[in-house]
Length: 264
Image (cartoon, rainbow, N blue to C red; front, side, top):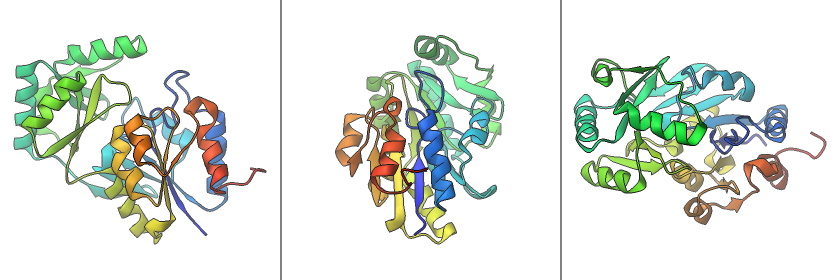
């Protein structure tokens, strides 16, 4: 029976240590497609931006839930898109400016952030480089913005969340920032939309993740699978905890649930 299998990208499929997708994970994705299953990429990223689109040809998903559910694409068609209310966006930008935290997003090939130095500092510390193409964040008021990212500490994120009940801040798997998710959007809602599109029951859904922006989809899927390197809070709500990304976690879980054969 055909299943729908969803994967987060960063630190679930994409190993930040090696800056690559493990070969065993790619082999699992190929085997899933060959078995007739639907492969979904569900991520906080917009996979159409300059620093992400190269991975689409590598992963070859049948469908995508981008930007934590603000954009849903299947078979190359845009099924759903949500843009932030400009009044909410302006209030958050004003707050970020006043509290000196990073806030913004990437649209196409340009990066629009309040306090871009916070972004640069975080990425230099994490990756050793920052190749962002920063532009004036105020231009966001003239552009369609689906969602934004927060750059700052956990304490700063919690303080901002208290000021904006319309959103949830889900910390990245590394604690230098968070996805800002409007409460009307989520990866889980995106997965439900894809199940309806493909005519697959949610009882035939699997979801892999590692971070707190995977919380809802891990709970919503029939089988929620946390990576071995996942946040402890995510492991607590998962149905199954597989091995870490660098220990063939994707492959091993797909085999455990007989989604692929040993001969794949």
